[in-house]
Image (cartoon, rainbow, N blue to C red; front, side, top):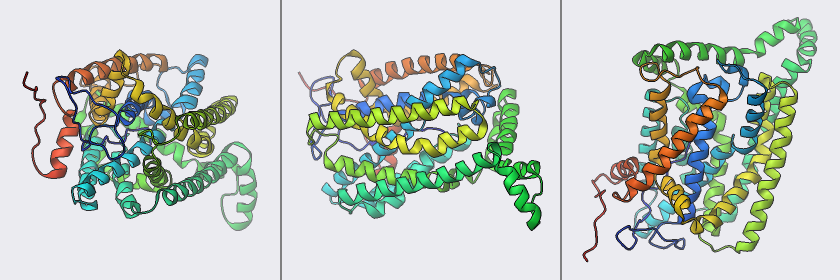
Length: 451
C-alpha cells in the first residue's frame, strides 16, 4: 500500500483574533489550534505526495520496484529511488499515523469537555471510512483512509489507558509486527534469490511437493506475477481513458482490498496510533516537554533512522533493486529504523511549528490545516493529470519528470490553502466531514469583526 495522509482534525477549535483570524499556539486543553500539529501535517501532506507520485503516474508495482516503470529507469533514477527510500518512503505514513492518533485523542478531549464521548468519535470514523471507500473505488486505489478508520475503531477501546501504557504497548506490538514481516519478506527473498528454492525443491521432492527450483520459484512468485497482471489491467484501462471501465474493474476485482489492508498494515497502524495518542498526552505538541531535551532526542531519532535507511537502501541498490530485495527492504527491515525517525521527526517539527510564521511557514501550516482536503484534492488533480480522458500522462513520465509534477502540485497546495483559509474557517472537506459528524450545517465563511 502506498503512503497516504491521515485525516486532519476538523473539530479543533479555530478561534483567533483579528480580521485574518490567525491561529495561535495553545496548551493541550486550550481553545485555539496547535500550530505544531498544523505545521507537521503540512510537511507530511507534501511529503506524502512525494511518496505517492510514482504510484499516481506509473503502475502500483513501480512504487516499490523500479522495474515496474513503463519508462526507462536509469542509474540516475536508481539513486533517486535510494533518496526517496531514505527520506520519504514509509516515514510519511508513519508520521501521519502518529498525527492521526494525536488528533483522535484531541478530538476526544474536546468531546469529553462537552459531555460527549467515544460515540461521537465513532461517527467521525464512520464518515472517514465512507470518504476512504469513495476515494479507493472512484479516484485512486492507493487510499489509506479506510485503514485509519478501521484501526481507529479498534483504538477507541484503548483511549482510557494511561499514556505510558499506550506508549509501551504501541512500541512492543510495532516491533512484533516489524519482526513478523521481516521474517516473511526475508523468507521470500531467501527462496527467490539466495538459493532457498533449491533447498525446498530437494525437500519437496521427497515429500511430494515441488521437485525443482523452478517449480518452487513459480509457486512463491505469485505476488510478483499478480502485481504485474494488475499493472497490465490498470495500464490498459487508464491509458484508454475508460474511466467507468476502470471504476467497474475496481469494484469487481479489488472490492475487498480496502478492508484486507488491515491484515497487512494493522500491526503497524494500531501501534502507531497508540504511540501518537501517548506522545500528545505527554505534551510533545504543546510545549510541556523540555524543549532542549526534545530537540536532542528528536535529532538522535532522525539520525538513527536516516543512517539505518541509507544502509538498507544501499544494500538494496547493490542487489540490483530486484523485486524481492525491494520487498524485504520496504515491508521488513526498514520498519525497525523507521520508528525512531518518525518519532524524532515529529518531535523536531513540533518545536519548529510555532516558530514557522513567515511567508513559507504560514503556507505550510495552512496546507496542514487543510490536510484532508489537500490529500483527496491531490488525488483528484492526479486523476486528471494521468488518466487518458484528460492529460493522459499515465506511464509516460520518468521518475525525474514525475518529481516535476510533484513540485507543481506542491506550489498549488501552498498557494490555494492560504488563500482559502483567509476567507473560510475550514478546508472544504474538513467542513463537510465536520457537518456529517455532528449532523448539522456549520458556517464555513469567516466573519469580520466590527470596526
